[in-house]
Length: 359
Image (tube, rainbow, N blue to C red; front, side, top):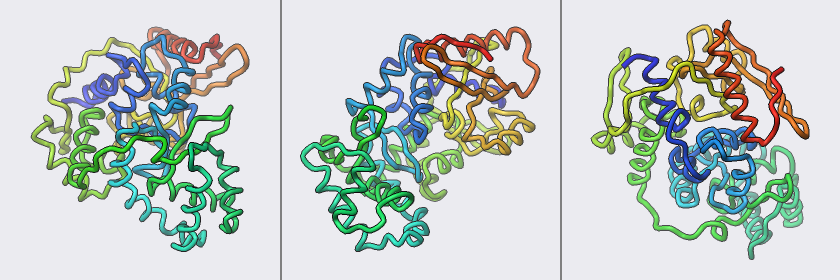
């Protein structure tokens, strides 16, 4: 299995290159969790995997209805997750995130007494179906005697409550995000044992993101290397694996051979799972490109992908009627590649329901 086959196989397996999904929830369910601190970028990460008649408003509608949720899970950042998965994902990964956050909790003087008071105030403020903005939560916390509930301190108070499974995303109010009580937003489900959740996360990661290594799984999930290995060990008989350059890549046994038309281009969003879903990016970028991405901040960059390989970055500027797209190639693109990039830009414009202007 060559590097190019891995990258193209991932394009297919993540439903970027083939078999688009019908609904936003289908994408999130397949990928388990989709990094979404950049909400607008994350909407395109879902849209890229949907039918070409899907629009930005479809993602907003799914989010507001609660068919997909947004919360802190796996790592100290937001992800889109499914209502059916949110509780077991938190039970499995929140302790690890709390451990990562421990230094900040101490720095911000968020001791057990403060956190207990904060949780109680948040529950009281949100109960009976209320959906409040972060500013409104700040007011409720300070009214309850939680001092300095603003800025970074507020962010970690709210994150702690998300990680403890008390609150999650509510519907947006105009352009503002709101929070809701998790128990009121999501129907109860049967609890899973920890070994069951490890196995479930491993199975679905390698099925939805493969070919991938156990190191990729540990990085993506935020689990320790030991837990990542235990999860894989539990489900490896349900997967196939292939060796390349001394590493073992695991994937679904039903995955078809990679056949992607060439050249085919995609404009990937910041934090797209095609980038953030793996520790080793050498499969999707030449050595010089990897170095360039490192200096740019790979996870913070909107990238252009042709035939599975990162070949440039892009940026967008929105106005009322149009989206202006500027392409920054890392190499000289052939005419066929330029046409493929232009087609990818048009697809993004259709998603936004805006006219595309190439800068």
